[in-house]
Length: 168
Image (cartoon, rainbow, N blue to C red; front, side, top):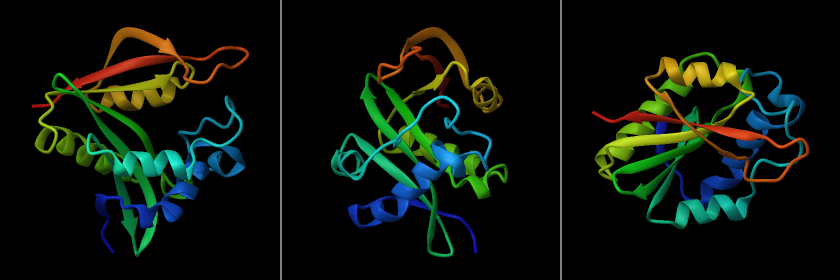
């Protein structure tokens, strides 16, 4: 069955949330190649945060489904000034490396351009995740030279690299 990508609704979140956690954290994340499990412990997000995204008209949580099961998502936020922020991109670890992430990125960029009217996308990636940064560089993103603190204070601290891509 083909991949279906659509905006998530609140009722989808109990199916999407575990996919996010499996993709980013814990032992199951290590089955994929894009995890943060070696850098950060604890949950990646929660249902309240996901609900806030779904209910915010300046954001969308695009969800990926196959055979009726959630297999991934990406958050697109309209930051204003023609810039969208892409975050929370994930594919279930057992489904990674099959082109599904590329499809979700394309859907996110199309939404940013066609729905939000943005001309540029930005994202942040933990500096230590060089393999993931290189993945985005192959998708047309460029390092801006900017960096920011990881949103949660950690010891040792983590920093984020800012990537950007024009939408044409």
